[in-house]
Image (cartoon, rainbow over all chains, first blue to last red; front, side, top):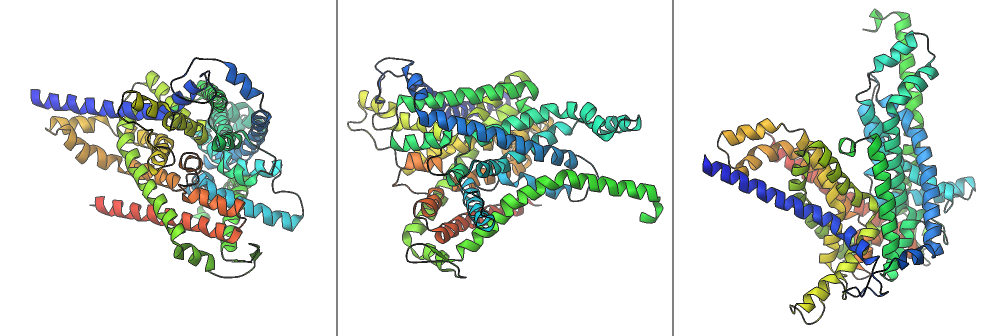
Length: 273
Length: 294
């Protein structure tokens, strides 16, 4: 018996050790870039000569990053609005029983997250080329074109997270409201909407973060001279690594961490991802 | 069956299907138009010919695919991408399973914090994480400076722009996906099953091999497939950590398409990449399921 307990303790210890290594592995790049953002010398030669906050000001003084941030913000908000407008009704329909092809449609709406980013980017690029030729509207490289592309990767998050929040929703409450004389719109706004609100908030925030951080698709769809924040970061890093770009990275980490904390107030992350 | 329903019941059932259709229709049309139609057009482009100035000529030829497979430069890129993707998937399994297990068996309050710490790197973006690795592994970075200071090496090691650093970077990008997938599957496995194996005299190794892993197999498969797909298609990590010398398939598609402006060839590389990914994941799926079917 004593021997059996010892191997279990040993197994448990080994498991925890590997889990700690894995967790550290995930966080090392974030810690490393955060540390670099405070180094006082411009060329990142280890060890740091001192520490400063100056690079945050330098980062904010670069129009590429501010402009890229504003474009990403604008595209992210619009794409999230479009994705929520399309995704919420779809999630509601998918939650109904006895509707043919439900499983297949659910899988289909989740597909944009599974198709690789580079393939999705090239495919939407050629689609917009053809659409521009057919309609003679300036679609390629336009902000609406980018928004439509991003809405495609917002929809799966909305469908998935609202689906998760509808799993525990009792439809009979909605039916009771209808039986008591409420119109379908009243029943929706007074009964259904309040109970799926956490799912909408979580889906919208996850969708927004996905759009905001998207790189591969945006690379294909932006016009020359236009930039999003992830593209601005990538292009800067292709050229050089310094504390300024690290400061930009830290601001992005902080923004996304804040968005996640807000989401967590509505839906416990451990339950939805 | 239909004859037993009254006319009003039938109308109600039909109305429900119509409402559901009206609700889900717009999203379905949007995804079909934004995903399936573009992929079909891309495939058509890949069969077109390339003119002397790289302009696209309407044709119906396999020349682009033949060019890819007959030029050692491109087949090397494909082989390299496959090698990196397989390595990343294996390491993600080895590191991801223990972390997923510990998270799945954790109590709620602390668990939420740790899940957030796994999700945060996922959402922060690949370029930002690549910057972190660059600060560590550059020729004057933390690792090289420390090694030189303690006298282990005389000249900085070339870690940047190698297969090793690209693999390290992609593992960090994909690990959260593996952990989250496995975590949700392990949560569904009753702890009592593990206790039963232990009380019947199994040691931890046998318990894991004979009880835990077979039960977690759907998650292991789903997580590996996702990790493999993402590694095959990585873009930012190979561009930033691999540089122009270490080319993988994702950056190759972008180069041909946007920088070389060779649309038919770029489209065909895109399809080779997609086909290689789909064929390999489908094969792995069949093999694993056959191996464990009783």
